[in-house]
Image 1: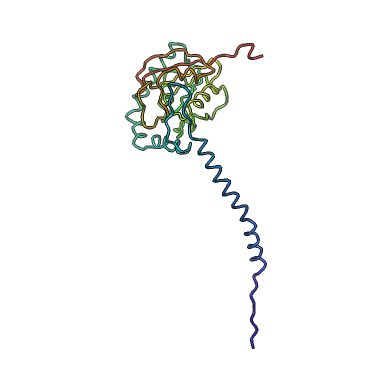
Image 2: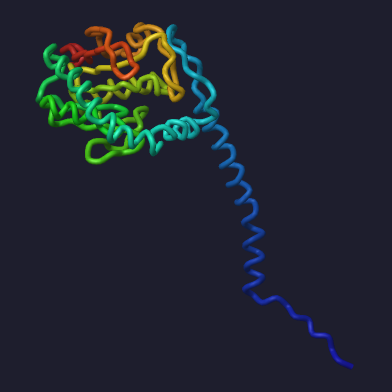
Length: 256
């Protein structure tokens, strides 16, 4: 009569089973934590309706990631990028050069200014600044275009406080959080520095716009540390109004 031999699991198998069973609660905790974090982040990323009269935030984004993805659909569009590099290249540089030359005549920009172009795409604005003599110029955009444009999100500029004397942007309507957009400009501008925005008033911008502006008044409320210098009508690639702000200098009392 043959004896039945029971094949017992080896020590390694037993240790693996024990470790697996002990890890189940930890894995469940991680999954729950990640799910909760994602849900919380998505909810927080939804922009609240603007409390500033005359400025309307467009709804429809489920998260900040979805907003960025939508913006990249335009920036990475191969047909648009080809147009920006070829047919539009010289035309935009010429128009931007005329804008910047006029600002120099008004003493709002000088050859010694350190300048930043926000949402600069391929960098036509940067080339225009260099053409009129402002050699220390750079642009930021979600997609870099070296050496003219570095990677950067205008809701959180990748620069130190008080880095620039001059900042220009014609993409204010693309800001999902206008307060952060302006806050970053005022953070990175030096006291006495100038910010120039080209915006569209009242008329609805393109499908990639994240807000609608109905007057200059909301901008005056957003720029809390700056004073309005001037407003004028322009013809800037679908944008109709130039708004210029100068960051206030600290008084002796504030410094002390």
